[in-house]
Image 1 (spheres, rainbow, N blue to C red):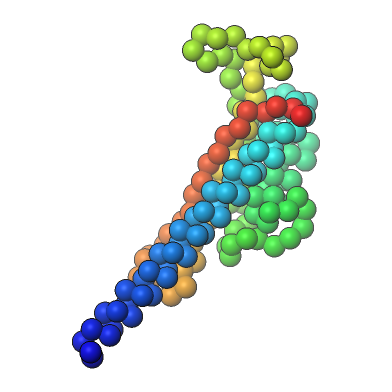
Image 2: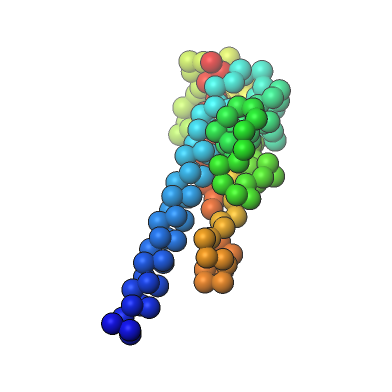
Amino acid sequence: MALVTPLLIIILLSSVELGRYFHNEHLVVKAVRDGARFAARHDFSNFDACSGSPGGNVVADTVNLVRTGLRSGGSAQLPGWGTATVTVSTSCSTGAGGQTMTGIYAGRASGAPIVTVSAVVPYSPLFGNTVFGSLTLAATQQAAVTGI
């Protein structure tokens, strides 16, 4: 019993840490997905430039939504999740596979704007960085802007 108990405790604590890591990773992926959906619902006028950042309050509101789950205010969902860890950028697609843009994108010379939201968050383990080293949680999501 004296030989097996320390091994069982190590396995137990490792499984708790692994479960916590996957839970935090799920939070980051879900937050980035929600942020991309939120940014894609803004008006087309915020996405006139097909590169760089969207205009208006799109970037500030999206970054806050990703970090806190709220459009304004709130505290970060994970420790160490600052505003600099979230990026929002725009690109445009004029056609895929030889197709021309139709529907809501038909009148846009620059094509369909696509917003990309990315986050890289440092992971803070329960038992310190001695066992696992320095880990980060990263996620990226794209969404076509619908201008609704």
